[in-house]
Image 1 (cartoon, helix red, strand yellow):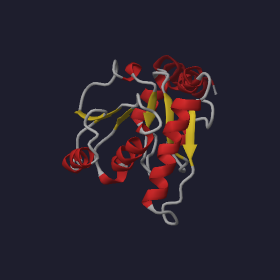
Image 2 (cartoon, rainbow, N blue to C red):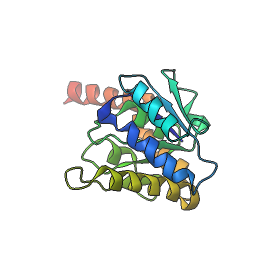
Image 3 (tube, rainbow, N blue to C red):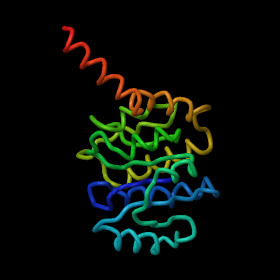
Image 4 (cartoon, rainbow, N blue to C red):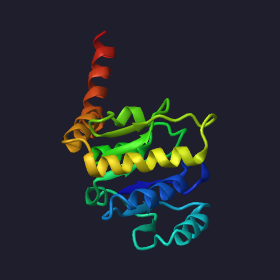
Length: 181
């Protein structure tokens, strides 16, 4: 499993770490690699160490991810306020399964619940962190133990409109439409 993010509190990477620790009990082969840098790095490292999870959760810093995504099966996102996230688009474009919160932006663009992953309902104001973390862990376990049959096919279909050649064609079509009215 992978996530790629700025390591900042609003990204809730700590929730993903805690959820991975819980999920590991039911998915023994689970590994979780975290790519990115930011102000929360030291706290995340301490959290990983406090759960004695260094053997399956790693902070790997900032790297060029183009060729990295294909080494994974699942991309996990825990932001509750993500917009149109570039890492979400890159992950779905690489055919990864996806889990993330069912928020107003970002995740629902790239996640088809039950098809290429799971959208997790969330109400930050009403729920405590432990309930949210447990739902993340449940989604991880569900994905790896009973997940969608062909998540990669769905992810590739979702990504198709965002491919460079399709965007270029859309711009050409728009320019032609404006010119010829």
